[in-house]
Length: 238
Image (tube, rainbow, N blue to C red; front, top):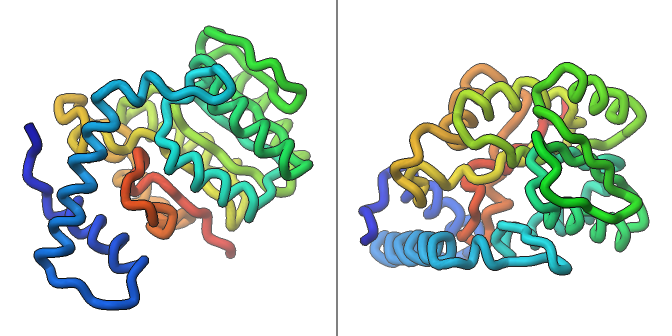
């Protein structure tokens, strides 16, 4: 059963639709597009695709559309370092490493509280521990200090308080013009898992109320379906 689109969710999707079209569409057509997008989003998330998507044999738990957007960002940014919190079984770390191979540049630093899988790739460094542990943050900071362009991906504990602390800790690592991507902002009814409770989306909302270093880049939602709505944060160039 699907819920009616809330006004904020509706207007965000409408903005994405209008951003990709030069002509004007009637409000009824725009609402229909937004509704279909949310319905497909829920189906793709809950009907097994999330747990049945792999990158070179490793579970990646991402929408292929978001992976395509990551590819575009990496091709544009050519980051020296990609920092990922939440390794899980390593699919996304390997995905990022393979993109770096294609670019001939970059490294991946991935962090998780427990090592549930090994990412066998020379560009990948795995750290085991809490992403907010001072020793982990110190190790990340040391790598960031030697990088000219840094991109950060937050895919760890999805409770709002934890994500908010990660935003505060990892936001400063992101270099101007690059991205801080907060994954799974779709939970807690945005539009999946309405019973989740405050999560990444709520953390982003609170973070941006007091931090003007980042702006939501809705252009990265051009495919309309993203598991990270309002989660593509670009750091302003001062």
